[in-house]
Length: 152
Image 1 (spheres, one colour):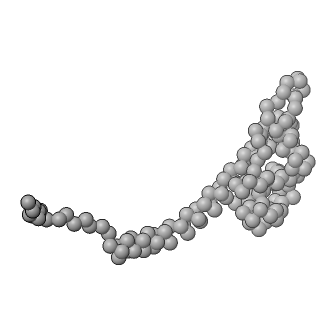
Image 2 (cartoon, rainbow, N blue to C red; image 1 turned 60 degrees about the vertical axis):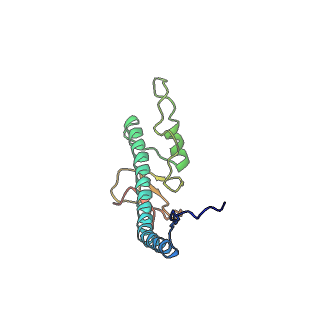
Image 3 (cartoon, rainbow, N blue to C red; image 1 turned 45 degrees about the horizontal axis):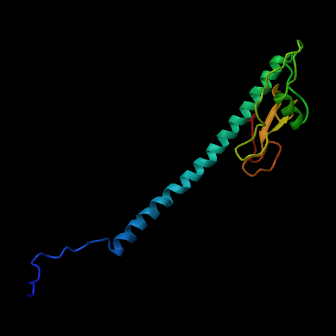
């Protein structure tokens, strides 16, 4: 016995055509071309803001040190000052002084901050000069693309 062919219509599977797929890819490419440059600019701004926050944190630690030490900011090389702020020793009563810094301050690019006191970078400034080498990671003594605490 021969079976008659089914009278049901065949279901036709429908997918995306090559033209539709290429059109979607072109639209995504245009959107990416508009968005990516704006994101990159915002990332640099965020890194600069993070570095300014690190500089402010070190400056605040130095101010706290000055409050505890007859209004004198720490002096010496970068390493000496950071060691002093992280390991301040004992007070006159022989009690341990809590650290002014918990860790070595670094900028957003992972480089250490620079410190100078007395400040020769800004005229008539009674606070220490603190700066980062900036995005190019080359110390330009607070100028160029360096980020510092004496200019706005």
